[in-house]
Picture (cartoon, rainbow, N blue to C red):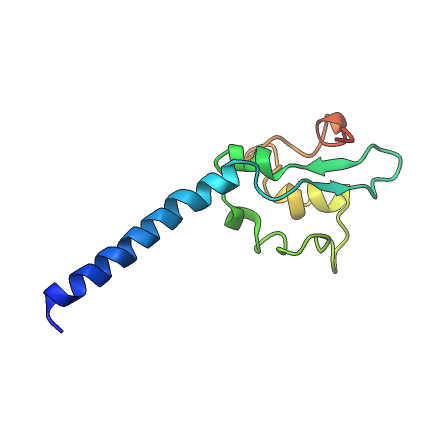
Length: 116
């Protein structure tokens, strides 16, 4: 096949890829996956994790998935307990919320434990 014959196929493929690249990030910016509520927080109010807030900080899904969290909702603490101790030891949310990358998981409890 000569280059002239491949050109329409390549152009179409390029247009489809460009459209996907433009539309996929915009659909995430429009809110992303639903919020996740962590309600097993003992005497403190629940923690509501907002994908929209994190995506608004220019983070991408692969910043957390699947290095820190699995993609399946409800699987965050399989094998390890999602506790304040684990966060403060750099696990789960504490991987970024260390006081340098993002605000620390120590201190102002109401910043996360706001019940939504």
